[in-house]
Image (cartoon, rainbow, N blue to C red; front, side, top):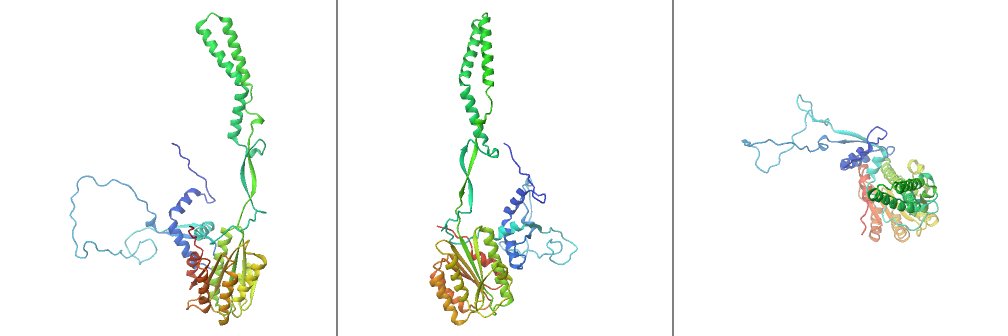
Amino acid sequence: MSYVIDRRLNGKNKSTVNRQRFLRRYREHIKKAVEEAVSRRSITDMEHGEQISISGRDIDEPVLHHGRGGRQTIVHPGNREFTAGEHIARPPSGGGAGAGQGKASDSGEGMDDFVFQITQEEFLDFMFEDLELPNLLKRHLTGADTFKTVRAGISSEGNPSRINIVRTLRSSHARRIALSGSSRARLREAKAELERLKRDEPDNLGDIQAIQQEIAQLRVRIERIPFLDPFDLKYNLLSRQPNPSSKAVMFCLMDVSGSMTQATKDIAKRFFILLYLFLKRNYERIDVVFIRHHTNAKEVDEEEFFYSRETGGTIVSSALKLMQEVMDERYPANEWNIYAAQASDGDNWNDDSPICRDLLLERIMPLVQYFTYVEITPREHQALWYAYEQVAEGFPDSFAQQQLISAADIYPVFRELFQRRMTT
């Protein structure tokens, strides 16, 4: 039995294979650390790497060793504090515990946590693991500009870099057998005749020499056939085929009205940045439409969406109406998978919440694949939330709403909204 060990090194002179094995082994620890990191990060460093700490006791490995041999007689003294079946509390941490906690002590020893750095790519992999856009359908093929290369058989002409060695050697072997078939058959007969003459007629030197000369000529004839001929060369034939892909668009609707405090806007921006990273990383072909609204809604670019300071009153229906107009003009529902994510503090002009409900029920929800609404407020739900509850009753599979109280809720709520669903 032979073993092949991959010793390729990454940029930091560390084994890539060993690193991936380590990340798989301590996946649960790393995922927990990533979730904690997302909740405390600011907008500007959302997609950076992270330093991960793993307790020393969690990376210990079991060790097999010999037990004490022979018969042992041990007397265990009793105690007055515990009885059988009671739980013993963990001793409090003290000096030398290794985690930097506890008071100073003149005794004790321990081990610090194991700390290592994961890259930006690894951080995003763990952050978006098991997440997807629900109900994504391949409604329309965009294959005009996306292709994939597939194997299309064997060709006698092609690029030397695509030569098929096995097929080439097989063709060469078949050609040499075909061209030398009669010579090899005659060679076998001549060898058999030579053996017979040497055994039965050893004194017949004339016939023996004639047979030996013929055998030499046959071997030269066979060896004269080239091992490889241009006719033998075979190449892997590759062809480009259109790659079917789904056309999807995500509408990001953010409330920037005066009721949205700076802290609330920051939470909304962090939610949308997380959504934007998720879309751009997991889906190659997806359009993102950014809409900011107060009393009026406006389609903006990415820079203005996240950093503009414009504010005003609150009419949420203006964003939904603009979304419907953009859908009608650029994203027909029979060709596009349409998604939407809306973030607001729920504070809306009283007469506007029923309008939002009717817009969703009658014009928007029948055309979209999935609509999410997050309400950012530590208080009780506002009128908009209760209006959207009626939408959720009408479209339970394609409408979801969640509440965000603090920045720590962003990532758990995001995973809840876009968790991969089991298909039946």
